[in-house]
Image (cartoon, rainbow, N blue to C red; front, side, top):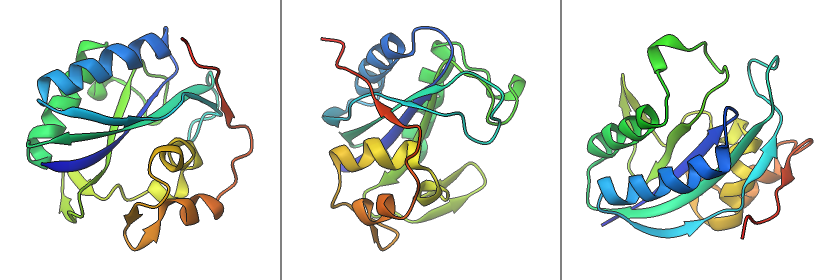
Length: 163
């Protein structure tokens, strides 16, 4: 079984309800166990700043799927919730964005998948929820909590639990 960290994001529709359903779909389709789920965080838009704030979270799952099979599952789940990657603008509004952050200690560079995620340590909106569930996980030689300490978390706010 592989330990996989996945970042969730979105800013269109009821994102928190989408996360709940998407996590269930990921676990079902990937025959995965949910090990940890962070809180949800309201975060300022990144890249393309002319849009609504995002909600971000992270999960850790255990799966026996290989990285490419899991990527296929994540893209299917995104599509199920209305995401069409080929028709959207880069870093633009979306119902659901699922990014594989790390898959065990696998290092991979393919046209469709780079592991660990190449921009992880530039993105506070991923590091804040990730540090909540895996502060001591070492990715690319950097401990998550140390990576978080090196970026600004301005504008990121933990949302109350939905109950």
